[in-house]
Image (tube, rainbow over all chains, first blue to last red):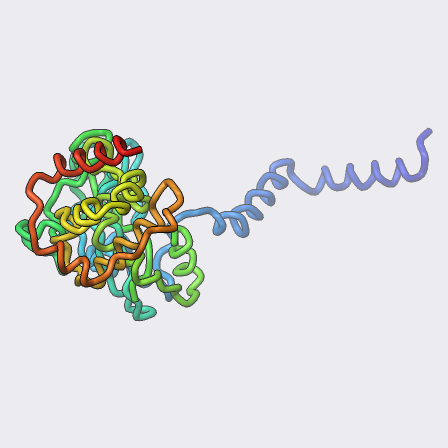
Length: 165
Length: 135
């Protein structure tokens, strides 16, 4: 014969088993994770007051001097290449004005290379771009020529690397 | 400042921390090809990390650093170019900068900049070879 404590615990456990389904534990854990844990994951969560606009549109402020397909529409993001492509190290660098805080951010438009053209979200704003006869201020190059995976151009990112003013 | 630091500031809506102006000039006029650390792309863009301390020691080397097309033809003013070149020597070199190194001046840049350098690769190779012979 067990102790009174064993009997109490057994009664509670059997009562719990009758009232609660076995799957409810998984359900509750799932609900807890999705309600609290998921927002911490590094996914694009749309516009924020300091970073306004949709990175999947050409009008997004960081795209002011871009010339190509937006990686955010091609399985990547404004700062990462889609799977199967590699960023070209050499790149076009310019500044874009963030309307939220009034600063001009330094943006590096690294191309993603190694696969054929993405074909989605073509964006050709080219603000402050100069003709090819001013080579240091012209973005009409295939920057993938400087990558290790060849000149096949897939899409362009718009990484912020500094704040000019 | 790294990408992640600036991006985190944006996400957290913190006040933007300005990049020092000389570094920003390097980023906007040089970094696209020479990369953030000056290492370039092998076979396409020469690394400046080893050559800067060597070339900045001699008059001929300093003249080359001003006349090389990426420097001479940049939209930077003579003063800005002098500041960027000095910053590069002090911040991108793999070896400690010689105590004898003096910063480039606007007048020095103006003196060299107007004379175009045609044989760029050959001049660079000759200067670096001459420097290694003398050591």
